[in-house]
Length: 489
Image (tube, rainbow, N blue to C red; front, side, top):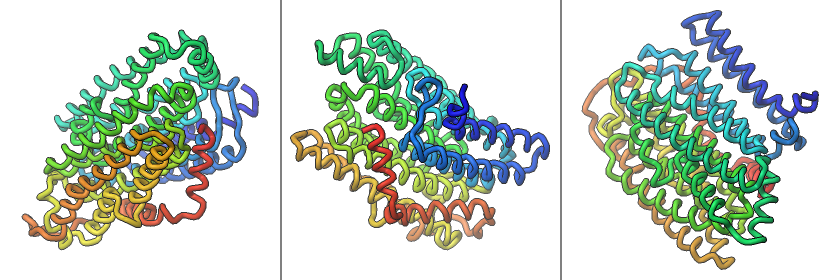
């Protein structure tokens, strides 16, 4: 390894070192959350600084298997933000239940290293290693509350189905490697260009594409590969649910960008129809089932499936030739992360006392018991609905506008997809606003006063709220998103 290689991978090495330091901090001060939290957050800030410094100049390492570009930098900062907010939101929920905070932070940091490796992958094998480094900690986190039967059940389902999907995905990668003779993403794209020009998509290549699509569809919880999501989300500790709803999803979309957009870009005319069908099914089923839920955590689980469908709209628009589709997808990933984490943090704050459920009745009259918390929850729910001028509105606008532009270029299916997305966004308003109605217009079943929450939780909620409200107005943000999209588009 040369010195330039070490400089290029400095953010990834920094993330591993920070994880080790947090582990040693827990050994030095066992049972004390203060040193662990301070070390974790300071370490994440350090990794973020390294990411910004190294991301100023595109570079490769280890013979081209690892690369840093604008997309890598954008995704790494997003992953760091997701993990940082999750660590901030966790202690208020974990401590009353006797769940260790240190292990929670350490497992999250390990998962972040896997996501960062995905973002920088320029080789199919490195991509798969990064995927497994990201999802394996997720299985542990889903079963973090070991004495809770629902948590154990959700973790087992997540682990078994996740293992099968990883095997299927790897089988698809083997097909691509066998047909192209290489695992380098750029070389795979060149080989596929030559193969398709010579005789179109072969049976073996079509099978490989099908296997990889199946494996990736599970990771993003696209219909019909979504069945693990509601049980895993409802059974997991609420801060873990918040992380699982955004962290692995954004990481899986990073994998899609590196694999489908870069490596399989020459075949985008072939996988466009599949993406359109997946987007329609995922949006529609996710919203329809969410409409019937009376448990807010489970409702948000199904709504997260619907949001996967909206993000797939951006991918479909890119496959139809619009770079705006990728820009919208990346912006959607950032906006969805902050508003969904904020919503789950509000639920976790409400559940600080053990035994409190996340049923709709728990939210009845919340404005009188927890006025600030209910207002913040309303902001996040309105953003998830897509009400302007919140971040969720801009996120939906960008992906739908990209689909409309693609339809004007002759892709009629994208126009239909845009209409379906608008109708689904309207339907989603019912179940999001129903929670708001319960908070402001229903009588509470209990007269308990509001609970005292930690400063970390309030600080994290303030950050998430500010980003949710002002993300669409941050100067230069869309230029950054555009640069990240152009790095691979």
